[in-house]
Length: 572
Image 1 (cartoon, one colour):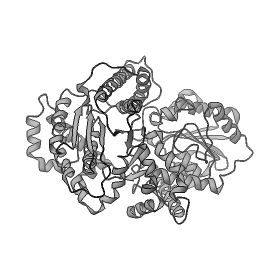
Image 2: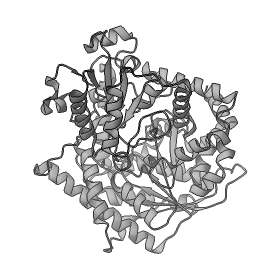
Image 3: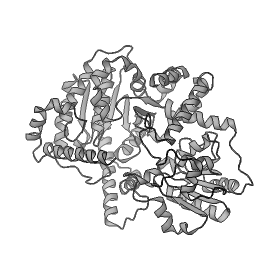
């Protein structure tokens, strides 16, 4: 672990030096010449938008000219929104693959390479000319099949949705500060908030001006819930432009699509789930195979397997139930209610906050209610991600201590970094309470009653207790915590939860080789489209180019049970 950190740090330093060399005060002279001279070596490096994009992008565009693979979809004009480091790489490659499939692609970009929520927030002035030199070459390299336009070139004043700006600025500042508790009297927090206000306004101006003169068959936005992407997604919907969002998720080598809105809106999941009978998921031999795969995935997650999952979160994978209880300080003879928060700043916003305005409000309100209305032991298992470098600045145990709640003898708070396997606690608890954590779905699979405090993707599917108001939420909580005995979910509801888990993680996540930059190094786009297994990735490329109505029309063709089983077997 220490060796890996040292290597990663060295790589970070070298990349930083190269970035400074290329993005000097007068970019394009010494840096560009040196990197171009050693282009063969650069081609073997992991893509980094800040220093080697100009060397790698021409190579990626070669895929556009490779022989097409019939049958081709109906050609469309597609707008692809692009901003921030890493996105230029992924979107240029996606554009090349879509152009190879016969589409005309316009990359509309904002010339920003810094992270949207890490200092320094503002790019060096060289970013705009650096990106212009790269992006202006794309049309010639692709015979006009892909063109790029700098959206910041036209900032003519237009109408701004100030309500959206203010709302989104709050969410984005939470992300940047990595905590929900924002003190706008703090100069640092106020500066961040003001920056997010400016980001939102500029994004709205840029996108509205572009769409005054342009219409497309389809628009693609990465994520669509945060920063500029959120503004773009909302305005495109307002303008009546068909829009899809894309996102990487918890599995390796996949991408998620949502047709019609940002990826947390869950339109695709709603349609697939409502069509599960029509798609054949409820019939044998498919149902048993799908449930088996879902169980395997949950077990992999509990045991920190990264065969398909991206992250290792559990720090005590071989722990037994009795060992987990002992490590957590939970008496083995006492029933307990398990609360599973998410990482506070990443708990989810917008659609999820239909009952509580924030995860902190949910957590405080739930614990205080349980302390007042039940004699049960209450266990809060902080998200294991809190113990990692990205875990935020507002740990749950510290939050509860400031609130004075940890003084209660009936409350046990397990910090994120504790060596306690969360899954052993889930198996043992009386019932579970969650805000937006996926543990709620996993507890339902285990047969546990689960109360959900937010409008999450798996709520209102028939296996959780859901609410639209706080009074309804607390009524569910009261009924369970005062019941003489809490029954397990029936087998039919457990199976329903397990099938939803499969649909969410396996059906709605499409194989795509470029979820990480390392995949590009291993197989450049031109090699991929010439390979025998390109067929595995065509569903993603073709479905992402459909609008919401077209996706509905082609749902059975692409996602029937037989096709999904083929995908599973090819992944084995």
